[in-house]
Amino acid sequence: MRPGNKNINIVRHVGLITKADRNRLNRHDSGVIWFTGLSASGKSTIAHETEKRLFENRVRVYVFDGDNVRHGLNSDLGFSVQHRRENIRRIVEVAKLFVDAGFIVLTAFITPFEEQRKFVRKQFEGTKFLEVYVKCDVEECTRRDPKGLYKKALAGKIESYTGVSSPFEVPQNPDVILNTQKLSVEESEDRLLEFLRESKFLDVK
Ligand code: ADP
Image 1 (tube, rainbow, N blue to C red):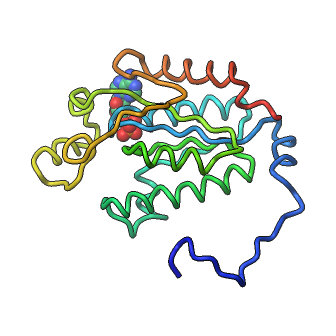
Image 2 (cartoon, rainbow, N blue to C red; image 1 turned 90 degrees about the horizontal axis):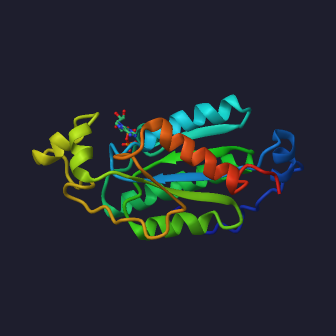
């Protein structure tokens, strides 16, 4: 059966414990912080450091990282437009389960197209959601190149590499912009945590 097909014999079961019950127990709301930006812009680094700081403050928090997901859940997917779309769709579905389970989910996926970002935001309507644009130009990302992937892509050894042979559309409506050419990792974390405090992101409704 293709994803999206409606099987009339599958009926959603409503549990006895709700998301609100879990959030009360945890003493914080659940939600999604969706990082978008070029490869090597700093999404994973900032997501993991922020996870650590939130965890130390007793927040149930978990990072979904692009490469890890592609090794497991989405190991059958490549980088065609359809597969990139399916990659995001599955991640969103798993993130929804984590949100229901009471977690703050931090995601570190390039999410290069505005259409994908709109889709993601829509999927989390009614849920605390932030789009964080980790801004860094392709020249600086190429200089950083922590995994040597820009080098390979520029040598023509990787097809459809975002920023080299596949576009990255500048986000039109991010909630937070972290310019990692100007901010240190710690300054980016501070700015994000400050935003969470000011917007009462973690406060239980
Ligand atoms: P992404 O998840 O966006 O692909 P990574 O976090 O894996 O990016 O890699 C970013 C690289 O850039 C890391 O090696 C990190 O140490 C480095 N870096 C240098 N300066 C910064 C900064 N100011 N903010 C974030 N990362 C930085």
